[in-house]
Length: 209
Image (cartoon, rainbow, N blue to C red):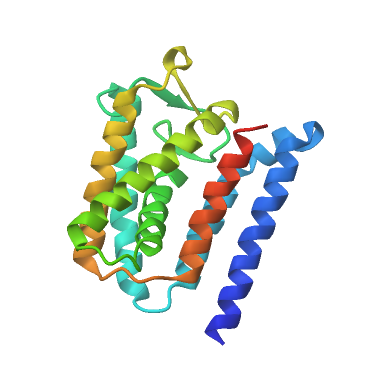
């Protein structure tokens, strides 16, 4: 029964991202689809919860912790420039708290969990996995940044992405991975893996539009 449910969850992810991809590429629908982008991130969050098949309470606690940490560092970043660099959020990521979209806090947790799932099968010590997962998230951000700027998710001063942004991503990603590994032993989850690769491919394709 769980296998069937997971297949449906993965199918839903593929359909939503395909609709988003096609919609963004069609001029008549682009603005509408982009304005609903935050719903896709919320869908990812719901799918993560539904797709968890081991310890859902612990996962929910971690996602809450990641939300608080993610939102806090983004608030510091947006209002002081001390983290990431000089940037601001646009209007296509939904409701904001003090100029930071709430889904950004959620997304930090989702990315952390999915990256840990992707590398689970590698025969590496936990310390190396934590570092590898953080590097994967930096690569994800590198691919996502150009799309985010063109999609009014966020923008950088002078349209220049500072190297400092990736340094901060790595540092925060390591912290979240450390917390995640301390709370539970990450497992390989087909839904989590699918979500990570679907999103990654989604942004790669949009880089060529």
